[in-house]
Image (tube, rainbow, N blue to C red; front, side, top):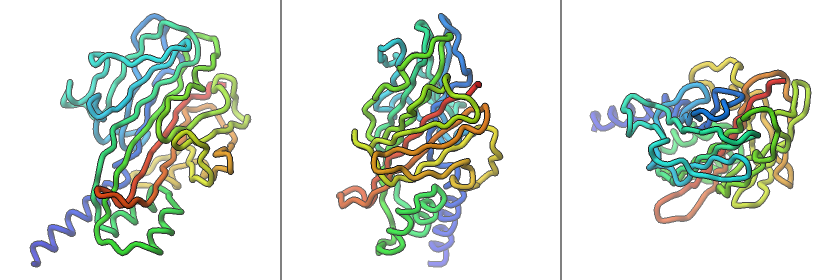
Length: 281
């Protein structure tokens, strides 16, 4: 019995140590302006904005889309480099052949996946990710010792090809959880206000926690999402919120919609969504 308890404690400690480095997925363009007519890459990270824990592979993805010039295309498998093609990769690299000038959009939606966690670890994870409502509900109602979660990740990145500012950044990808920015990042400058809208299952998501961060903000290891963020927002009845762009930088917006479910294979379902962009002015 003592040996079993030691093993369980090791598992719990390992899981808790990795909570800060486990989940959120970001699609990032390292270049503000992609090079027209040449190969460029979007980087898909799973972990934190700065460090990826493991590669979300093409096989793990339900959709990979690149939107440019009004056209939505899926890159062929040989233009997606992941851990399956190179065992040393912890990120995934998606090739973008920038043959149309304008503001482009990349998107990735993963297949649903599952995890089971001890109740204490699950609660700490909710706290770490800043899911205030889910924390309160869990503490008030949970009677389970182990929590089974079904989770799905969605990530979007905005990028620029050439100088023209176009409306492809508004494209609806149809992901279950999706964040939209109302202004083209190329038209925004430091000191301006940016507004966003969060959609869930195609409808505005009201009263949702949303966190906004930027790349150069101090990022201590194991810091919680609220601690890492520049803004903690709540969406209004139309799923909207706004914030000030304080300076030129790479910015990212993230949210997790967590809900209790009564399914044979899950007690909770979460849908994760991010969008990244760069402010140059």
